[in-house]
View 1 (cartoon, rainbow, N blue to C red):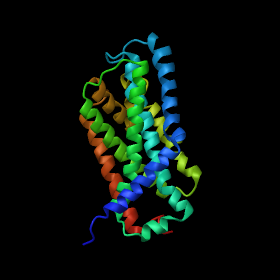
View 2 (cartoon, rainbow, N blue to C red; view 1 turned 180 degrees about the vertical axis):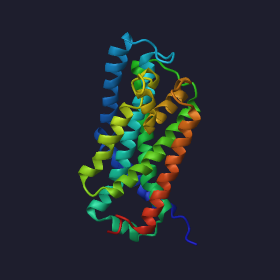
View 3 (spheres, helix red, strand yellow; view 1 turned 120 degrees about the horizontal axis):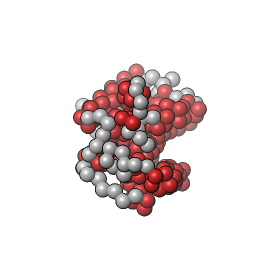
Length: 256
């Protein structure tokens, strides 16, 4: 039985992580700046005129949604770009011929993408304190939920990077699907505020469960039960792992 190649996984992980620091303005500073503008516009300028939602001040209420908005977009983009570039340049064949398996490859690429997103999440939460005074009710559950979402969407981004055969396709899912679904998933409002039947239709949006789940860990209030949010995220994680396992076994898009 082949042993786990720790050095191989570490090499992929550090190379991907260093790539983010070499492009710090694009991968870290730009998302932080964008999120800060959301806090200024929606939190400070508009939030002061809004009534509390679910018993939470509006400026505080939007923090989990904005964090999820950045987390989903950056995690997916980081992971997809990380695997797409070796395919685009042809260096993926060197990786496939190296003595590293599926586990080492995933830990390297997905682990680096998740780490970058967690660093970004920590910076955004620190930045939020400059505009809003807030306290996290369930900090350990919040960390666990963020880790779970980061890992799930890193895997999803990896699948996207394998699927895409152009830079245009690489940006379709994050820009045209994830971002709109996050905006419509209760980032700036509670789903209960929607009139019928839109409040029921909104529950067909899976991102609404992620935003609601993270909001519960922050303030103890949510639109849907927290157990459903955790459960659906775990199911999504398992589906992504199964899909990637099939990709490596069949060589789909990797050896074409």
